[in-house]
Image 1 (cartoon, rainbow, N blue to C red):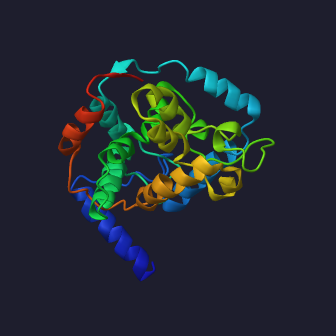
Image 2: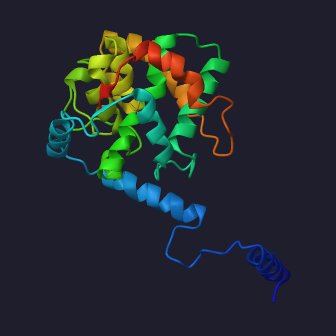
Length: 246
């Protein structure tokens, strides 16, 4: 037996003696390559969305999916969400990712409290997976134009594939300012959509989208954020003092 295999077998036996067992062969994804292939398969399915699919999902999420809930409880539920399409975060939870993003923004000197509070909630649309939604309708690699759209007409007058940004926008629209509604709705927009912007889109794109994207792409699966969710409760209570209908 090659030396490499002998070492692997030795380590395996040592781990099993300590109560750790090799789960490979049990039918679960156990390699990075399998994880990536699943992620790409979900993205390919998301790319097959039609205008009818978008209309159906828009109608569906006009109604609440959980009920009246404190925002901090919704964020706690993010700890249950592992995004199978994220090949940088892997099995890190969405709550961990959100706290990483806030940490990165604060370290960069961003002090706009409304913007920080909105960043805390920007991925809550992914909670739809807990209610049976398919991942290809939640995360498909970002928003891309769908159908025919007029350059310069503005994002609000164009059609895109549906994802978690639409869900959080639909449910939080009554609770945030117009600028923060824009952030929630378009935080997953991709560069090919840029020609569709109007003047307001361009202004908000520069002011909010670019800073958010810089920090939202803080995917460090091994990094433990220095702050916990409890540290952000005063910020959440300032902007969301009462339960929201989610």
